[in-house]
Image (tube, rainbow, N blue to C red; front, top):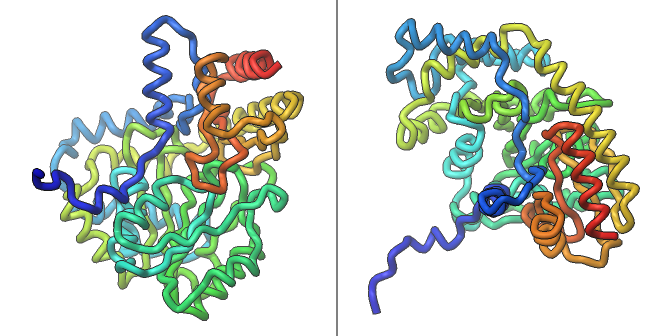
Length: 388
């Protein structure tokens, strides 16, 4: 019997199913099939011109070399200003660590804080990388169910019952992927109270903070006492349609930030310098493109929710943020994965099974409305036809 090829920790590493579904969709397209893509969480808008022009200027000015691991000083300053302006909390550049996209902040936080056996509370259904990384570092995943009848929030008493002396970290995400739900101020205050009483940290994923509709974005970072206990994730991918630029950042307590930067040194070295310069323009320049994008998302949201609720077997809650819907499909008498496959193979509509986001996603599917109104209408027609 030969030696084991992979380290055992690789057994605990998950993936992001959206990319697997995308790969299957591309196979079908290569065979001549038409596929409407509602599986990938990516704005279908182009990066605003002023941001692209800033990147070109930076290239011409020589921003093509290594920078400090935590980020260029001028970028850390700009992103700290952005946080202070949008959260109303004084934020120091020393709290900012800039990374290639937001995912490294998730990974680095767990590597820095979570020892084997430490418990991590996280939303389920939720972004699949949360559970993957908890398992990878040897932590114990403790899911808190998001409840449809609560607008995909959760029961605060249930949350508090999950807190133990082994709780090291709690992950929250608002607005949420995959549900589009948001956490109320009341829920955030309850989490903050538990964190301060029990001494755990909160990893607050707020990458969709600007893609919110009826309500104002609420952040646990704004609650007194929580800046010292919160690692907040922000980024440019969603807000500024910059997914391919790979630019995100963490707002991190000053006693932890140097160690998060050290993990960056040991992995990526630093984040691309000219991308950071473009990121400065994004947060300091005109914001009208983002506002227009969000307004278009609002129209698409209303269109897809109305259409899904007309399809027998579907029940779709109105999301308050992000660009996803997470309809209940139990009335179709089909499992989530079964329906995902059926819609891809028979209807030519790529969606994601709710179980891609955790066990509590069974009975749901996720659709991204980051696609044109015409394509959304056609997708709704195709779904209704194949289920009819």
